Image 1 (cartoon, rainbow, N blue to C red):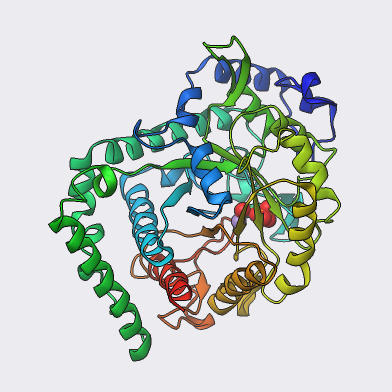
Image 2 (cartoon, protein in one colour):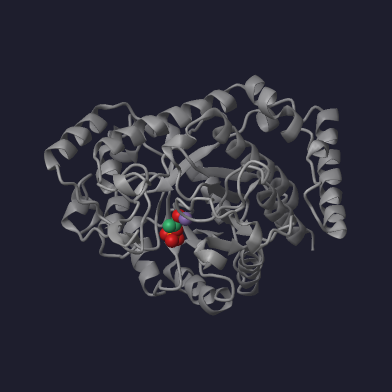
Length: 467
Ligand code: PEP
Ligand code: MN
């Protein structure tokens, strides 16, 4: 099917993996009609010119990232819960991503484009449609926009799609409120963000690591003082920041209901935008070139991410890239690699080569989380900080060794400090161990970095650039 055959619903003629089957189709139709009626969460124009009209558009920023002039930081929850739509979790995620981006800007000496897995990251692909609970086979939890985490609430309910819209809109509204007013941002973040010297590094167990981090903080503080002295921070650079939202575009009924036609005033050309998020990605389980998810993404103007894993056939990459981006726009597609530590050297070079040969220029991003999920004692899912760092380091190195460049990173993180939330990943500068994993931490989905571990990775990347 060529791009001219594309329509908002052309994905329905393709195989759709991870599809949700609703018992009550009439109810689903009513909900989808309502979603089509509700206002866009982001306007088509905003996909290009986001929260701050002064910033370059996201497509432009990603183009710069693809050309190595900008670094992409994407992060947030694995599975956002409706319950996270509340002041404190939203503020913590903003805070940690802003702090990380500050360290990265300083370390990589390039501007950072920030994309949050937030305001819509509800749907989850699952390896198995069912799971065992107290000796009974029950449907798996598919994310808050499909069914409930509680084992008694696993029947897909179309009403949850509407709930997803309203929770996304409320989350985005508060993000806009904080960031749209430099004053509010100052109130919430002044101490922590603008004064790196107040960042508490007490959690860093090793004395030498603490010294190294402290040295970065001192130099960052110095740089910010200097900017203040010469008046370079009086503009929007520190108090107002651009911020983009993203989620996995998994539930195509939902995504297509929020897809709107936009007529370009100057040319009369019709374009289509997903107005539920600025950036959407296709997961590792749904990126088949002939599948419904690739078909849907072909028609939208939003930048698109594609997860690339150990099972990605290098020959498929040019096919997917040509389908989604036939005009080879630089940075339109972000390839998010997630192989698992130890697999990067083996798998990444062939993927880089396949893309290079295709003539596409993509944003290369490392997701060091999804290839590194393990079972800890007691069967709890965890990730080892050392594996996360190893995958990151190998990705930087492999890109460099073949004359390519890693353009960004993708993390699952909570923003909550270890004093607030039970640890989910082990290791890091706090030297958390398996035994620190609380047995009552509920893996709604995948284990996330806590606040301290998130800052750790930012410091480590900054150190990588120093060397
Ligand atoms: C995710 O990003 O939460 C996810 C499920 O990733 P992947 O598709 O890479 O497995
Ligand atoms: Mn995940």
